[in-house]
Image 1 (tube, rainbow, N blue to C red):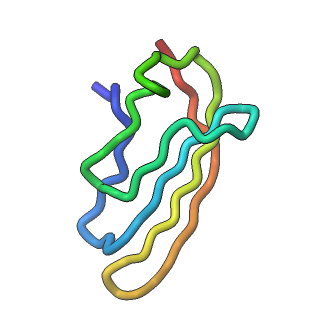
Image 2 (cartoon, rainbow, N blue to C red):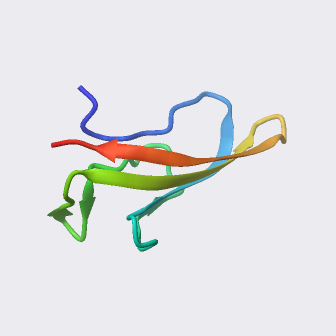
Length: 75
């Protein structure tokens, strides 16, 4: 059901989502709402672990938000 991590909203004008592994290596980056993270890096399945995310959003009303946290990858 949730094999791909997407950011979804009708009010986002621009956004960037970055996923990092525990050593700070960038394993995924997108600026497209239609592109989500499938738990892979260089077409290789990543191991189950906690990964950090950073999301920067600019809404249609001009407001900007940032969100960061952790996401658990389960297989």
